[in-house]
Amino acid sequence: MISMQREQHADNRMRGFVADLLRHEDALVEPIEPEGLEVLTPAGVQRALGVGELSRLGFGTALPAGAQRVGLEGDWLDRFDRLLGTQGRWSRRVLSSDARMPGDPERVLGHELVLDNATFRLQGVTPAWTRYLVMDFRASAVSDDKRDFVTRLGVNLATGALPDAVIIGLEPFLERTEADPVVPADADLPAMWDRTRVVGLLERALPPRLDVALDPFIKGLRRRLARDQERLHRYHNDLHLETMRRAVALPEGDPKRAREEQRSDAVGREYRAKLDDLARQYATRVTVEWVQTLELVMPVHRLTVQIRRRKADRIIALDWNPLARRLEPTVCEATAGLERPRLVCDDALHLVTPRGLAPCTGCGRAFCRVCHPAACPKCGVRPVSS
Image (cartoon, one colour):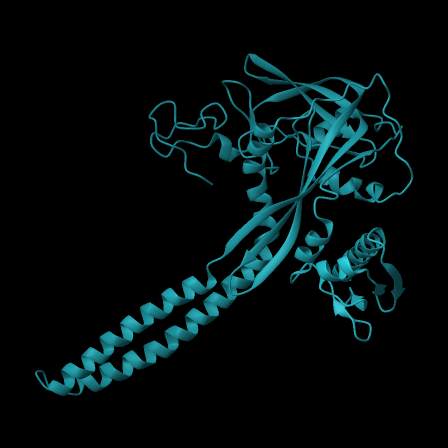
């Protein structure tokens, strides 16, 4: 039931997006049931979308009579890209809220921040303003099948956090149509990051999120690959057993026995070649393309936190978002992942996942992948890529 509701919500959002886009391009749009649109489009829209002057578009499981299905699959994203051009690649929204934090900030912090080898202490909570960069990417996975999907990555430019759950919680507020509030003149907004810093973050943060999004698709490929491999094995194994049965029934030195043994070798070569063909058929190529970026400005409650490890300490900042009503998690400074728990390194008190402080494969000494990204400081062995 929940899955069906999510699919229906996605269909409604897609229909709303297409309706708004077409109206912006001076098309006449009329909603029709079930879950469709009837549109009268100008010539430029017809060329970009590959539709007739009068057409019907469908977005749900059931389509209106004569409607084309519109969705993330197929080439509709490419059609919308042709229509949009450079429009909408960058936008800015300002949100506001005067919601207060829950009565016990230390409890909120203790629930979110889990450190296995260090302690922390809340130093204070102050009101602040921040910028989020919310970036959308279109990814295509091509194998014996194809999947298109959109993945979103948001970063808090003040704290460097990647608050995925916070960004999801803000989505309903982004759909509001009322005018944005004015940012106060004394709001101390964090500076925009330069391109090098943003690209460096994306190189670390996008792959694990793409892995999660691709997981159902990859599992399906593996099931089909295993099925085809099993089918090939049964077929060629039966051929091999049959040729060997005939061969062993013949005396040594008989030319017929030699021919049967040659047939068995040929079956083995064909089997290995077919396995190679399957490997090429199911090899997956993933391409990622930036779609748009939203600069999101809003007030937050900033928690100043002292991290202590042995005799050293470090101050970090975490933002509690009043609209999402969540405290952002600390990001792993080595992998940009969000999995828990966090460990704190000895050298610079970087917060990392266990993979970011794993033992060296050469000498066995644990070392921080942020302090020493290139190689183990003791033996020089390069860390294994995860």
